[in-house]
Amino acid sequence: MTGALHPLVVHFAIVLPLVGVALRWMALVSPGRALSRGATALVALGAVAVVVAVATGEEARVVAEEVPGTSALVAAHAAWGARTRGLLLGLAALELLTIVRPAAAIAAAIGGLAVVTSVARVGWLGGELVYAHAAGVGARTGDSADVARLLLAGLDRQAAIDRRAGRPAAAAELLDLAARRFPDEPGIQIDAAESALDDRGDPLHALAVARATDVPTAERELRFRRGWLVSRALAASGDAAGARAALEDLAREFPDSARVRRRLAAETAARG
Amino acid sequence: MHATIRIVALLLMLASRARGDEQVIHLTARKFAYEPSEITVKKDVPVVLEITSLDRDHGFRLDAFGVRADVKPGQVTRIRLVPDRVGRFEFACDVFCGTGHEEMSGELVVLE
Image (cartoon, rainbow over all chains, first blue to last red; front, side, top):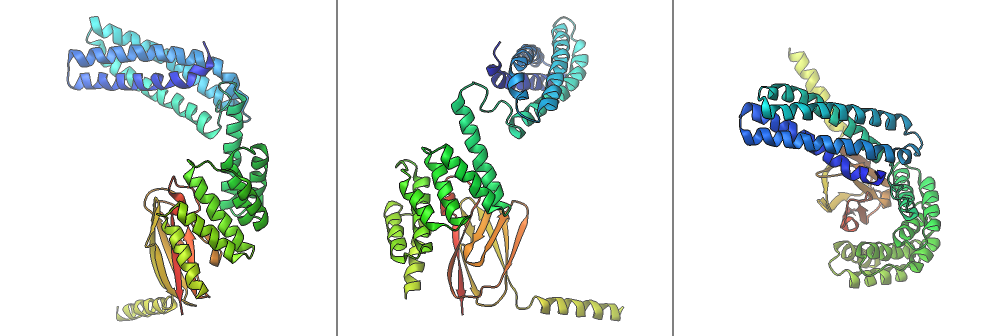
């Protein structure tokens, strides 16, 4: 069983038992054969999903453990996965028993609460692994391009955090590294050019990078950023006429932009 | 009793005088606009901007006066500045908030 299926299967292993237990409680409050059978079917399917989730999780485990600082979390996630599997198999047996002995429904409803708690715990731990530690993200398929994208995202996010925390030099350093590693990625080139202007106060370098970056027509947001950056960099380097010309170019490409209109009006007013 | 009222009134008056010259301006931020988008203030009169986000995390960056701050939902971000020169100065969101973020901006107009 391949570990690559784990992220897919776990969603069934979470939703099916939860809805199944909810149906069981609804069937207790408002007795009905359809609700009861529905609960049994969902819990039984949930048990199958959890068995598959635990098996695929074992396969996926090494990839997650490779990420520094995750081994304790992985172990806890695996232990709660195995615990949930045991609980859910027991609950599925109780649910099947309700078909021949309806009185077992009360025990199934109470047992369902333990399953819900266990599913919530294992799901939360899995979420922590993926979203707080990026365990498995980028590395799941073994495709190095996925890892490269993970690196790019990490560098970009950390640079944004550094800048907001008042560490512009650290932000610029990360974006320079990203720009060197990903020369064909226009988004990161523009990020690095903006950083050259805003974090290092180097308008000429910002201008050179922005002008050398080819931004596809479809990337309108990025095209706007590049044009805006060129105008700002020209202004910062003392070329007011060039800055205005760049703004006028931007106004032609983005005629609905209130921001560009406002800047042009302000420049016109400043010139008297 | 009367003495207490007089003391409280005096304290309130002093507090009011302390902030007397300070203009407080409330702004809201939401994808992808500030409201109001144009703020008019007087030169050399201290201003306190109180900014609240109505949806998600935004930023507030006013380069001309070296101001930047995070604007988060459920919190009031207070920025105090003294506009010491006349003109029109752009402020903008510097926390990416989705497609349309680049247009999220406004102007601080400083008059004599």
